[in-house]
Image (cartoon, rainbow, N blue to C red; front, side, top):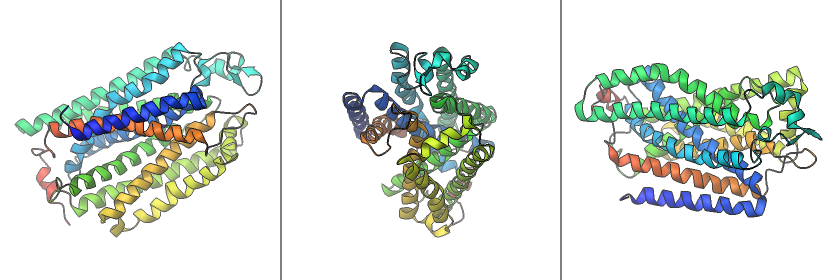
Length: 402
């Protein structure tokens, strides 16, 4: 592979994966596997968000996004790697006791004291959905659909660089018209299966929308970092305009408010109803150092980026918008950890501490999964033109008002 950047990213991925695997000897397979799921959820959110963003841009025939869209298309190359990143958790569940990550996969897993999963009335009601066979089948379906839709979008866009045929634009609009509901449904199903089912007693009809908000914010923030990286090395000089940064910054602000709206509504409705089957999820996240993580999310995931992104100058200043993008990505990682890690309990039923050695395995997992995803992007980057040079709206995009 004659691509130094991709080779370095692969080395980071291998090193992070190896370090995470060594963590099994220190913290045990349950802790390490759950930490791996956090990193997988973070990078999957970015990839799904990029896919959804491309679909939305095509449906609305967005002119300003054309030069940015190509980098998102390269980001879709991460989906096959992400499928491989989930595979160890699925195989471990099949080959082991089942509950290495998801407790309901082991009928003998204790829940709520001395009760076992197999004797849990609530699990009996959900068993048709929560079983390892359907979990595996639907996980394969999710990735198959994401990879297929991504392949259609990439093929049409890349081919148009050669022949300039407008039918490729029409084809991508058609793909986007059915792709948006397909991706919306599959990301919701994935969030419920992979993350929410860790505590299957909990009820929430807003969980898929919460994950969607993290997907969109993660994709937009990562997109900003990629654009400014390309601009810094000279590729996007004269291409990336102030108006492009302003537009993507507006979307970052929009989905910051959207995350706050969804998160507050979910909390308020559960608090107001005061039903034990729902309130316990928040109660355990107000225990120990998880209380401080909760407060951090309120200020770090909403208030701070919201106030920063209100400023036009901050949105169009390269150094500032880059720092805001890094902040949002960092807090999304904490948000996903907040949703996943408290599922691991001690013998008293309390969640394990956040600030502990297992946080290290989440970081090594982040490097492991991320290394492979970044390598996929860097391998795709030189395979086609930097921007869609023959897209019907490329001229309009390149002459955005300053």
